[in-house]
Length: 143
Image 1 (cartoon, rainbow, N blue to C red):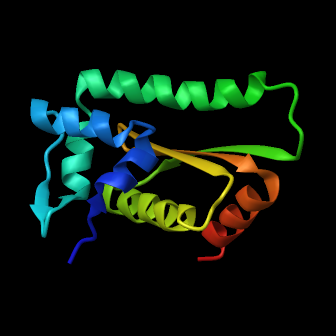
Image 2 (tube, rainbow, N blue to C red):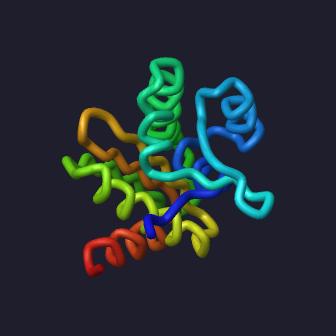
């Protein structure tokens, strides 16, 4: 069975709040299924959501602001890292990659993950504590 995403994972990937995502559900921009009271979203449903013009622009702004915020903070008190990966992959591979990063973020105390999909390219942005970001990237490349 294909893995699905819950509302918190979609919030993690997009940078949208769960409240915003619930509004998108009510508007029909985001489609999913409630299973035992928990929203679940397939990779195909998320692909459709990510490709809605209104949502696509919001995601572009969120991704850009993640990198801009990192670059503009000149008063960092500890080592910080920002990694941007553009990976030309299939929807299935993009699903596996985004799920991997969502799982990794469960234990990350000081890292932020953003995922986007556009024309067959998965974009992953990971910012935060340099050690945590390095460990997540090491886990990604050794999987």
